[in-house]
Length: 332
Image (cartoon, rainbow, N blue to C red; front, side, top):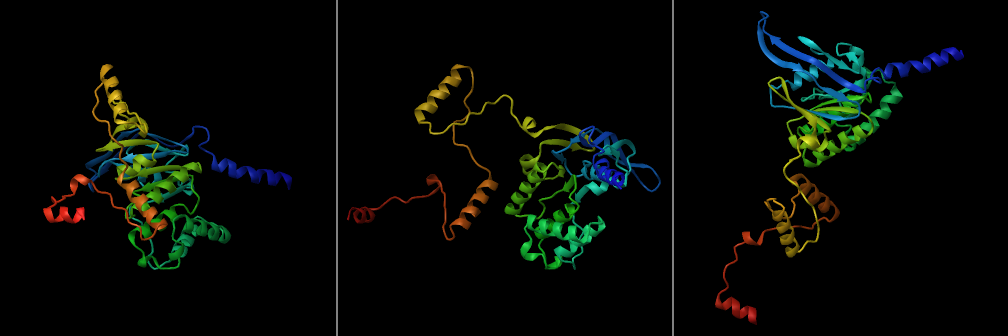
């Protein structure tokens, strides 16, 4: 009896850590996919000798215009397509090994959900597909409904949902099995700025939990905000690969941030730069992003209902010259 208990306790560890040796969750080796027509003639090369590595616990961005091979790459990772040549390894297993999909969550670009079901019923359905117990399904459903912010609409049918709300349900179903690898295809589609920010915060929290995220998006600002590394594809070929912080760094420009400088201090700094052979292009106040501005205004409005903040440039306001009658009234 004691021996049986020891063997049983070791099985989950062996099953859940096949990738422990390499530290890589996804690895493609010379991955090539050629689509052919009905007669077997070469139609288009969707991927050409793709070599990428996605490490455990990172957010990896897959970028490229339409037709660059992003969706083909995801389908090859999931084992929905077979490569023409090369290999895809997921958790150190060949991507055609279907057992690996038990550890993967997938949010497709278009969520195909049953519109007559509620959120709870939808998540319960997907939980059954992963053979979760009734108690585990209930716990996960409560957690995920709160996570995606649908507590007040969980008992409404999905046909009554907006596109953004449907997107949140799609994300919840992708997480129902508590996966180690999450594939997100255009996750912010249909979301308003607040929902987009919440989605990005959620993606970052998944990384903090030690999960690996592969993100495909046309929203470059989203990728910049959350991804650790990115691969840029074009016409099926890998054009750039690296850390976001390094790829975006402008090497020949030095940026200095300071507070409370007087105009005299700014002039003196500019003179020092010129004296050392540099060029002063501008000394001005930094700008925020439109997203941050929007979110700050909304949050301030929630804290102070009815308050209104209007910022305008005095130079943009046409002030008519005061006539004699106006001057006299002002003097009075």
